[in-house]
Image (cartoon, rainbow, N blue to C red; front, side):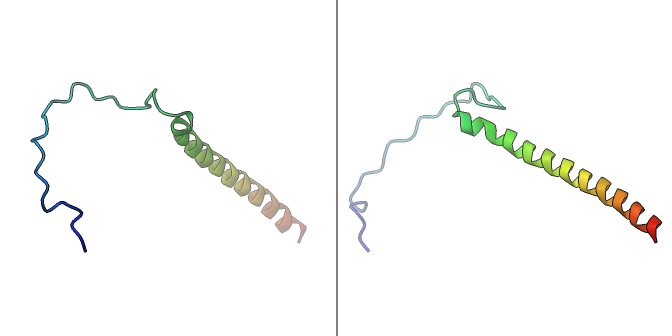
Length: 71
C-alpha cells in the first residue's frame, strides 16, 4: 500500500479554538422541507397504527360477542 504522499507532508497548524455562543434545539428553519417532515411522518405512522389496532380490537370484541350468542 502507498502512503499517498502523507509520509512527507507537514503537519497542519493548530485549529482555532472558540466557544459555543448559542445552542438551538428543535427544527432548523434552514433545513430542507423533506428533512423537517420526517418527524411528522413518523408520528403519523404511529398514530395510524394505534387507531388501526384499536379499531381491530373493537371489531374483534363485537364479532366475538355475536358468535357466542348464536350457538
